[in-house]
Length: 84
Image (cartoon, rainbow, N blue to C red; front, top):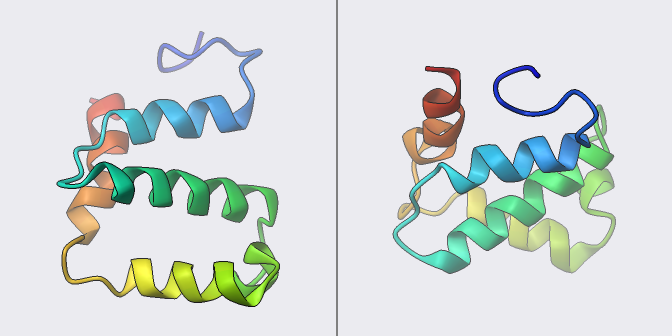
C-alpha cells in the first residue's frame, strides 16, 4: 500500500480518492473536476483540446478552469490532505 491506496488500484481510483478529499462549494464543481482529471489522465501529455476530444468538453474545461468560484487551493486540497 502506498498513501493508503492499494498498489493494484487503478490510477483513476487514485484520482477519485484525491478529489473526494477536496471540498468544493458546489457538488457540480467536484463532478466537473473529476471528469476533467480523468480526461487529462487518459490523454496525458496532450493539450487540453486533444485530451477533451471535442469542442463542447474543451469549452467546458476552459470555463471550469477560469471560474472565479474555484481557486488553485481548492484543486490541491485533496492531494495535500492525502499527502499529510
